[in-house]
Length: 482
Image 1 (tube, rainbow, N blue to C red):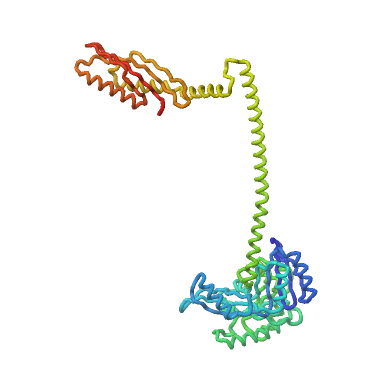
Image 2: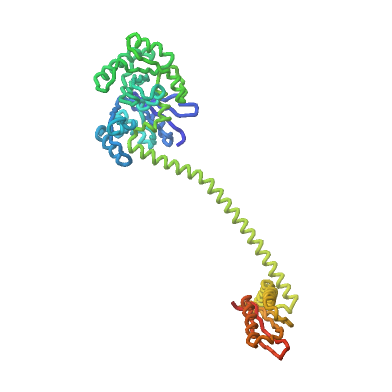
């Protein structure tokens, strides 16, 4: 759905162009008869997945200025739908465009209700799009798009804009920058440079109609803008000027097209290619498509987004699958390497057992031997920790003089932690000035200090002889079960 096409529906048929970077391609015409419609169906079948926009240049347009209370959200849309159903009940091609808040009174919101009447000419081409399942994402009219031309003139002014095309003369009236109505007259005879009298005649009819309305306008003072080429300007305005019609201004269609970013290929005053380019550029803001066409376009955009997402996800998934495959191959290769190395180590172990009969031959014996070795490596720091804790306690109780210390690690038992058993022999100087109970309290305090350092102490022997030092023997255990 990358290519965009713009189709202009007229009384005589359909003009189709394709949008490119250089602009619109020359239009292809399909007449409003059996052969022309069949040819258009064959062409549309080949391009039904592209994006299509419709510019309806028919005289069956209606416009109605209206106001609604200044509400927001869902209530506002309910009121707008009610007004559209009330004024335009016979057509689905309708919409409301806001002009902002009123400057006085209740500050109501000003609206322009617009519609295209359901006619056989329009429905024939809409049915062809439905039949071919081609999506219409924009449906607009030259009258609604003329506001973009007004912005190049005077956005808030009142006046009459005259545009020429092979379909006829279109007169669009603006009051204070707001579209009031648009009128398409039949096509005059001859080239566009000779349409001056026809423009004058139709303009006078329209000014008489404006004079009969109670809009506060002065037709003789209403500016008139004629959109035409520089080559046709002199011939077109000569008739109008000689007739005494004042306030006629020429808009150079080439300058306007350049300002809007459109490249014109012809030299005549045909404004239809300019409006076709405006449809692709700004048609979404002047949308008159029915609710069914909008839903279809919305679903088509979602499907296109899903296709684009799938197209983008395909290479990503392929790359991910390649990475997973490469990772799996690397893991498989590594597993084969470790399996081969394990087999080699098993063969080496069998050879070692065969050459050393004193080693345990069973795997359980080897595992137990390895466990003992790992335990010694893990708990080789046990004597250091125990001796450091004992040294701190002896420093705290300086009267105890160490004489002998024997220690050994307990035998390995998988169900218990290794522990260090120590046999301590020491002397406590004579304490003549202290009773025996005080010596006992001192030894108990020493034992409690050892217990705080995770050393369980048990007094095995104490010998006291007069003035001689008190000899003590204690069994110390560091580690063991928690």
